Length: 81
Image 1 (cartoon, helix red, strand yellow):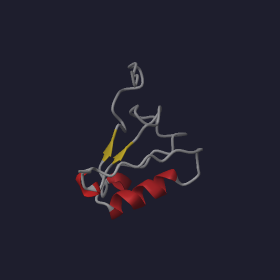
Image 2: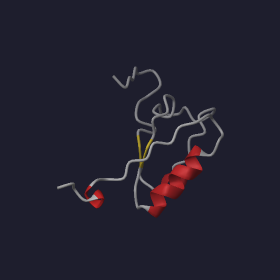
Image 3: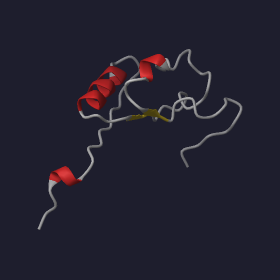
Image 4: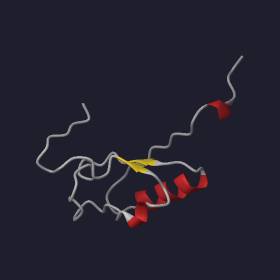
């Protein structure tokens, strides 16, 4: 017997070029489904790398939980591996 679809979490991946509205779409989806956002941006993981990364401000991240933003200092190596 196949499991019910509601027993699995909804996971959505949003990819695309810079400045195409990925963040706005992610926020909309997260709000609608009471979810969270996991950033996979290679530069947003670094603290203080705000210019050029289009990173949301801390106040803009208040209503939706975000992960992997401002995690490590820029002088520390970080890898997805």
